[in-house]
Amino acid sequence: MNSFLPYSRQCIEDDDIQAVLKALKGEYLTTGPAVEAFEKELAAKVGARFAVAVCNGTAALHCAVMALRLPKGSLGITSPNTFVASSNALLFESHRVGFCDIESKSGNVDPDLLEDRMNLDSPGVVIPVHFAGQPCEMNQISAIARKKGIAIIEDASHALGSRYAEGSLVGSCCYSDLTTFSFHPVKNITCGEGGAITTNDEMLYERLLQARSHGIVRKPEQFQIQSQAFDDHSPDRVNPWYYEMVSLGYNYRLTDFQAALASSQLAKVERFAEKRRSLVAAYAEQLNGISGLSLLGEQGQGYSAFHLCVVLVDFQFFGKSRGVVMEELRELGIGTQVHYIPVHFQPYYRSHFDESDVSFPAAETYYEQCLSIPLYPQMEAQDVSRVVAGIRSVLGVKG
Ligand SMILES: Cc1ncc(COP(=O)(O)O)c(C=O)c1O
View 1 (cartoon, rainbow, N blue to C red):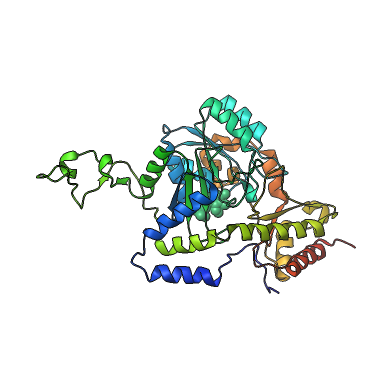
View 2 (cartoon, rainbow, N blue to C red):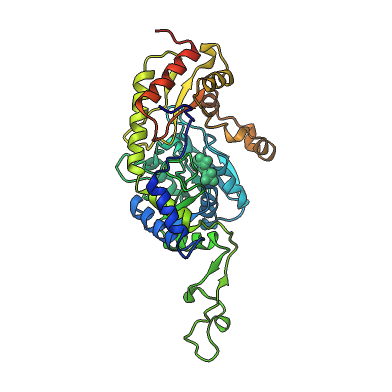
């Protein structure tokens, strides 16, 4: 029995620790063979041609936006029900941000509204976010985006291990140009801080590599100044120290010991997803029938790896504010969190964008009601029962 149940936490096992120790005893600390190995494993796992590992999910989104090389000021549309990084990545590249309202049953962008928006505003890119692990309606979103030449970046920070309705894994990029992941400790797998981008497009892959590391290239065929790149006396010989910076990039590299942890965790992604799903199923059964409360369950045919377990609570109906409910649950040893404050509510967005005049009623109503309850692989059946008993007691549910 766990004493305090946070809303989420990492699951680090002995073999994960051994993998990190082995990497620490190796030759490399920063980006080296373990990063390359992790990239190959990730690409193979999700069924994409290429994967690029970076230092966090925000950097992954930034690199993905950079790789598209859209004209400055292009419009990018994402969900208001996300972490601020999804839209900030557009601002980093001086693009404009637009939001599309959500479907309250999934927390994901409403595909019909996004379709209208793509027809009306012709954005350069759309960034659907697979909220809590539930895949967005990518079939519909990609059909219209492809028709109109709009790029797609899937923000799959919550969705490693999730599958679309037709069975392929999120990350395969079968509906998008690029997919990004986060390996922050509360995510489906972790390496402390970490992220990755997958793609099937070789040109985007090369640009991602540049974005990750200062815009630097090292392959002879990429060099632009032949006279500097090659030996004066034997023009076939590349100067061994030579590299070129051909675009503007960042230091978004992942270290080898983090990559070793990521590889070790990646091997467990199916087990973690299955455990999360069984815990959510137990929650669904035990919370069923409570008026004023519902669980954000799986939608359609997709398979959710359930990064989060979200309940929607009508706090007015129960006569208690969310803050009080959270505090009282904490006193019972139960941690909760709110995902998310709609991004357009944030002061920075309010003060910088006309979009703040526009309201997104579904995201706002959803925000008033959402509460993420404990979910992570080490939890057991009795932990679920304890959370449910806590919720019932705090909300005063009879019976
Ligand atoms: C939907 C979403 N996008 C992007 C990010 C950013 O990832 P990171 O924290 O690894 O930078 C997060 C992480 O919180 C997220 O939840």
